[in-house]
Length: 394
Image (tube, rainbow, N blue to C red; front, top):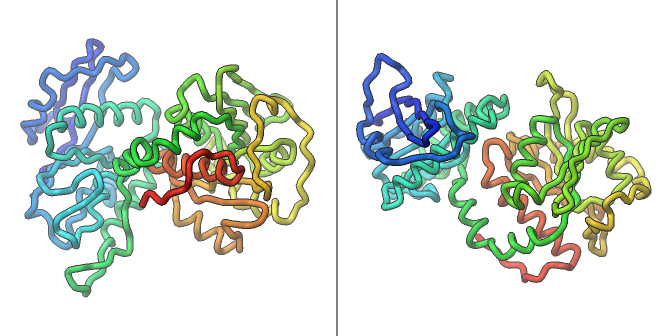
C-alpha cells in the first residue's frame, strides 16, 4: 500500500525547516522525511510560516488497474492540498514508467498540485526546492483560486478514467498528462536560444482578463523577463488609467477586464500579442464575460484606426506582411477553449489573425511559459525579425 500523510512544513525566521503531522494525534509515518530535511534551511523571510503538504510514497505493488497515483484525495474532496510524490519506480521528471500501461503516470508532475521527487543524488535539493515552490504558491494564494481547486478535481477524475477497459496490455489512454519538469527543461535547455531572442525584444501586450488572473499573468511575465523588465497599465476604467511604467522595462502590459474594452484598446493601438482569458469573472467570482466573444466581434466589426501613439516609439510593433493580430487564448479548462472555438466556427489561423490555445497560468506555470515563449517567437518569425531558423523540438 502507498504511504500517505499530510504534513505541516514550517519555515522559521532563521530559515530552519521542520515537518510534523498536521493531525496532532498522528505520528510521523514517513520517518525518513526528517532525515531529508536535516540541516536544510530556507532563508527567505517572505516564506516564513507553515504550509500543509501531502507526502505520498508509491510502491510497485500499488500499481493495479484502479491505482490513480494519489489523485483519489482530490476526487473525494478530502483535504485537498498540494502533494509531493516519492517513488522507487521509474516515474521520472518526464513521467516515464517501465510499466507501459501506466502512461498517465506523469500526473504526479503535472501541475502546482502534484510534484515528483526522483530517487537520485539530487533528491534532497529537489525536495527543498519543491517545498519553496509550494510555499510561494501558498503565499500568492494560488491554492485558494476556484480555478485551481476545480482544476485539481477535474484532473483527478480524468486520471481515474485514463485507461480503457477491455484493451490489450499496450493500452491507449483517452487522457494524456504533461510533465511540468519536462517543459521547464524544454524552455531552459532545448528552446533556450529562441527564448533568449524573445527576451531581448521589446513587447507591447494587451491582456484581457479579470483582476486576479491579471496578477498571475504579470507574475509569469516577470519570471521570464525579470521583475524590473515588466510594466503594467490598467485601462479597465477609461476615466482613470492606472499606470506603473518602468523606463527600464522591455514588456508593457495593458490590462482590461472586459472584452468590449479590449476591442476598444485594440482599435487604438498596435499590440505584438493579445492574451485573452476564456472566462472573465467579476470581483465576486461571477462570470461577466467570455473571451471568445471578443474574437467573434472582431470578425463582424470593422477595425478602428490607430490614434494613440503613447509608448509607440519605445515599443515598436512587430508586424509581418499580413499584419496579423496574434491571440494567446488561455484557460484552466484547455479542452473548453478548443471546443468553444470549434462550436463558434472560429479558425485558429486566418489572414487577419493567429490564435494559439495556451495553458493555465495558475495550475501549469511551466507549460504556460513554454507555450507563451513559443508563441512570441512565432510572432518574431511572422514579422521576419527572428535570427534563428525554425526547428521542431519534439
